[in-house]
Amino acid sequence: MSFIPPFFSDDLSEPTELVDPSAQPKSSFINHFAHQLRRRLQPIGLYQRIGFFWMHQNLSQVALRSHFETRLEKEWQRLRQERQPLSLFLCEVDDFANIRRQYGDLACNTYVSQVVKILHANLERSSKGMLARYQGDTFAVLLPKNSLDEAACIAKKIRLRVKALNDSPILPQSTPDCRITLSLGIATIVPTPKLAPENLIAAAEQSLRQAQRAGGNRIVLQEGSR
Image (tube, rainbow, N blue to C red):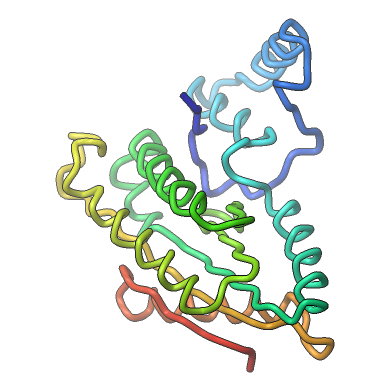
């Protein structure tokens, strides 16, 4: 069973050192964990500090923003040579900040955990896809060699499955009025010497904002660059 750490969207920093539990002796990792807890557990609360600790480690389920940017640059150069499309979509839980204010970090961690599971489940069907934390409560999904239609098909399944969470017993029973939906902005570009990865990111960001301004719980597509 995998562990998805508590999610705190205000913390945007990345770790200065990465810890891979599988690559360390068990005793070494336990000592490191204990040291971090002793250093970090201050009066602001045990649960929150544990959440910060886990968000500052090399999470196995969601790549860091720096890893995403490195991968994006590599795929851009490779697909420019192959003249193949590169798709990116950015997604956010609609009205997430308000949900967190009303229901707290524990409930939001449950929501994000389920969204991450859905993202991973659909990425497993796409070869060489990558899931990363883009910024705050925004996730990025990179899809090499996926056309706009293929990326849209994956995004549609993700959106519908996140929406279906509202009818399942997975979400906290203490939040019956909370409805979880997802907005997704998709962009697809065939890399050329005249374009850069920033063009793809800007197009995906624009698509996401359009989806949110239109009311959320929808997908906006954009092919090529402007």
